[in-house]
Image 1 (tube, rainbow, N blue to C red):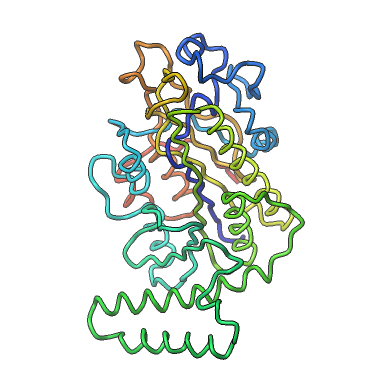
Image 2 (cartoon, rainbow, N blue to C red):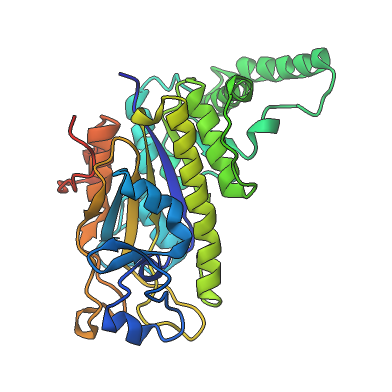
Length: 374
């Protein structure tokens, strides 16, 4: 059986749970959202009085095939409403202190303790998410696979090779001259090697799936190219947003969810056609949901959110419970979480990536059961 792989989709900025998976007939939803509401005639019903945002039709299609787990009420104790801090908590699984190791960085190091796979994880986008950071864990960051590489602006191949060799020599000579130089040198050599490997994947790729032109679709196409090339990549990381809809809430979220749903559907179709969909799941999350009551034209930072796990290996359906919207059940006007996100990490790390989750989650968390037991 092929190695299991994961594509993480980060919805940055706080995706509005209530208008993503909508309790459209709930009187508390109707009362609290006089302006920023998805009406019954717009939602795509999924049962239990809930419906998906109309922009999520492609995900509903995958849901109907039994390939989408909708995980309700995900969060952590004492929620933080700062984007930066809350995302940091999700990235490091440390709700009470500032963590120094990302949950996926830890996964990389367990998968490759010798740090010998420089493309074990590929991040699509600029800036490295803290989820992927761990001492010694090599991660390649790519903005555009089509132009990825070092010194591609040099048209003359021999001139480019000479320049790259000069870099290799420089990094190699610095090895053994102290821990800091060793670290910098190894990082530089890893980057050169990673660029060489990733530079080949677009040539190997063949697909008739037509992705959209937005940045998220581009990243998902990149993930498909990398995973289909079988270069040893186990983790791909993507993000889209910002979902921070303080104003123009309906339109902003709908536009972004259109991008996300389309990119996810095209990626799934692409992997299915390449006979590689059995071994990859997508994990979709946001750092928090939004306030139950709208602010007139948008929504403010809240807590309690929704996560999705998508793929052939997923036991589709709805998991956990939708949090209560009754005023007496709210946390300072926000949804209470009823499932700790570390439960999801435990299941993904141990049952999918087959590594030990305890160093990351620091405890025992009950599995949700969204993976097919095969």
